Image (cartoon, rainbow, N blue to C red; front, side):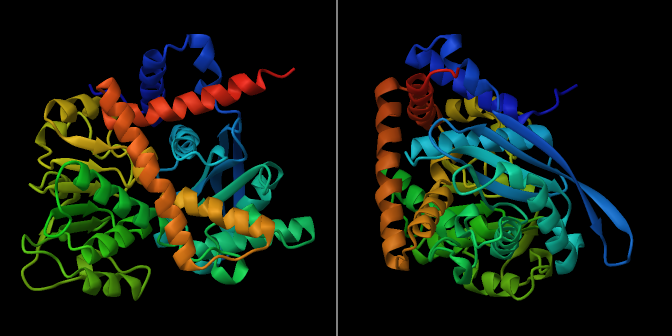
Amino acid sequence: MMAQYNPYDNVLKVVKEAADILGYTDSDIEAIKYPERELKVAIPVRMDDGTTHVFEGYRIQHSTSRGPAKGGIRFHPAVNLDEVKALAAWMTFKCAVVNIPYGGGKGGVVCDPNQLSENEIRAITRRFTAAIAPLIGPEQDIPAPDVGTNAAVMGWMMDTYSMLKGHCVHGVVTGKPIELGGALGRNEATGRGVMFTTKNILKKLGLEMNGTTVAIQGMGNVGSITAKLVNKEGMKVVAVSDVSGGIYNPDGLDIPAILEYLSKDRKNLLSGYDEPGMTRISNEELLELDVKVLIPAALENQINGSNADRIKADIIVEAANGPVASEADDVLNAKGIVVVPDILANAGGVVVSYFEWVQNIQSVSWTEETVNEKLKNIMDPAFEAVWSIADQQHTTLRTGAYLIAVKRVVDAKKARAIWP
C-alpha cells in the first residue's frame, strides 16, 4: 500500500539534503522544521439559499526571520493543514532564493469556488479575513492570491481589514485591483517569471525558444499567463489542460483563442472549447507527452513515484508549488531530465508582490515597464546563482536553490539568535 503523500515531508527532506551539504548540524536547522504559528478558524457563512454553512480555514506563518510572512490564500476543496504548512515553508525559501526581505506564510479555505456564487465567495473572504486579522498586517503577514482566489478577493480582504482598523490599509495584501493600490504587472508576474526562467534554462542548454514544444498543465492565472507569454516568444504550445481535462495539437494550439474563450466566463472550462486539429487528452496524458518542455502549473504531487518513469519531457519548469514529489526527483534526474524548482521558477509573483508592498508603504507608483524590468533584474541573477552553485556542487537545480535559500534563512536565524 502506497504511503499517504505529505507535502510537508517533501519540504523537510530537501531542506535536510541542503543542510547536510552546507555542513549544518541538526541544531542549526531545528527551528525551521516547525512553523512559527498555525491558526485554524471556523467561518460561518449564510449561503444564498438561506442556510448556514461553516467552512474551515487556515493561516500559517512558517518563518519571519527575514521579514514579514508572505504568501497566498487558496480556496480549494483539497486544502488541509499539511498542504498549507508546506506552502508556507516553500514561501520562506522562495523569498530567500530571490533575496527579498520576507519570510513565508500561507492560508487557505476548504471550499470549491466554482460551486459558489460571488456573494458567497465575498462572505467567506470577509469572515475569513476577520478571523485571521490578529495575525496579518503590512508589518506582520501580507496575504496574496493563490489557487481559487484573485484580485477581487484581495480587494475584499483589504477592505475588511481596513474596516476593522478604522482606516485604509493598502499594504495588508498584494495582488489587489489597481484601483485599490495594486501594482501594474502583478497579475502577469508569476507567469512572466516562469517565462523568464524557461528562457534562461533553454539558453543554458543551447536551445532557442522559437519552435520549441511545450505542454502546460493548468490554465489558472499562472498557466494561462505562461501560455500567453511563451507563445508570444515563439514556443509551440502543443497541449494545455484544466480540471476538465486537456487538449492537444502537435502542430500547436491557438493560444489567443483559448485565452479569449476562458476569459469570457470564470466557469468556462476547456471541455467546452474546440478548434480544428485538436484532440482531447487527460491531465495524466499531458504530463507524459513527448515534448521538450513540460510546465506543471496546477497543484502539487502531479509527478510522483507512479508516473515519473513515463515522463518524456527533457525539461520541467515548476510553475506550480510542489508539482514534482521528492520520490520522483531521483527518477527524473537518473533519466537526465532537468527540473527547474518551484521556489525559483514561480517566484515572479512574490517578487512583484514585494514591489506592490513597497509602493503601498511608500505611497509611490511605478509604471508596468519599470515593474517588469525590476522583475527581470531579480529573476535572471537568481537563476544564474542557482545554476552556478548546482554546477559547482554537482547537484540538481532544486538542491542548488535550497543551498542558497537554507543558508540565508539559517544565517538570519543565527544573527537574531533565540529569544529570550
